[in-house]
Length: 377
Image (cartoon, rainbow, N blue to C red):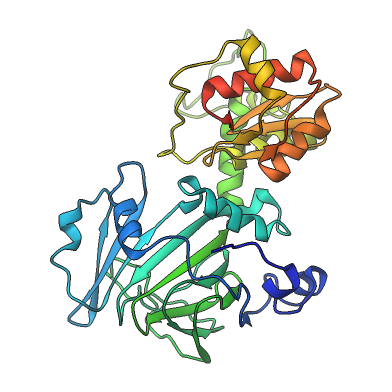
């Protein structure tokens, strides 16, 4: 299987401009044969084995007696042995953190900025399996691998959920359109478009999700970011303190002094850019990096840079803004002449052999290499 394909085929003959103008965050799009040769990245057995891996996030959804049951990872192989032959589904998150082929597949969607990418999820289900009618708060491309899945969608405004259900299942789902997708077919859904996927036979679906963080979340995290970066000098003082009729009352003088001090806290677009770069590249809590088992010396590392390819670890997220690089939640202000090389690494997740890298660039790459953020191959 080779996920690489012509971009016009991926979007059903649409140009990127037309797709972004007419469909992105606006309305669904069904694309037949988006990747004509695509049949999947792994087998059902491999998906279940991945779901049983310690550092993988996965969910098992079982349909029983007209309702849904949800179990969360970590799983053991025995958790899947007693299941019926129909009406269940396992969903594995972060496939791109574990398979290089998943990372290659995601490169097909580089027309959407990396800052918006969440992850690649795979769902496996025997006949009848699914997670019920629901909606997501993010953009998603649903790419069919093996088998066939029936997708029912609705642009309804009623998002009332079934109370007490372990999943966010819509109470009043009203089907407007439905299609059966086979291998290589793809469905794009904008945020809050209600949908229900039902396995027609043993099938696997790959979900390419793009995050849409809530403004409340961004505001809260920005304040957390600021708390380690602001400096407000001085201490509260009231040498002209006056007696009060009610000692429990916060005085106007105290309120005005504190308000005036807090109003000194300022931020600008550069602060917001640095926050976004760190926040959006921050690994999820369950992600850890492994340092090389045998660390090369700096001298040998520099020589290898000139002979081998530099590749980001599958779990690494690298973003850029002007001359600042963000690697896995950490900012590096690059006043180096090598910024274009760093941006190329962020864009393509790899760099071919570097014949004459600067000492500063080698030192930066060596630091990331020791952290397990990248490797040589």
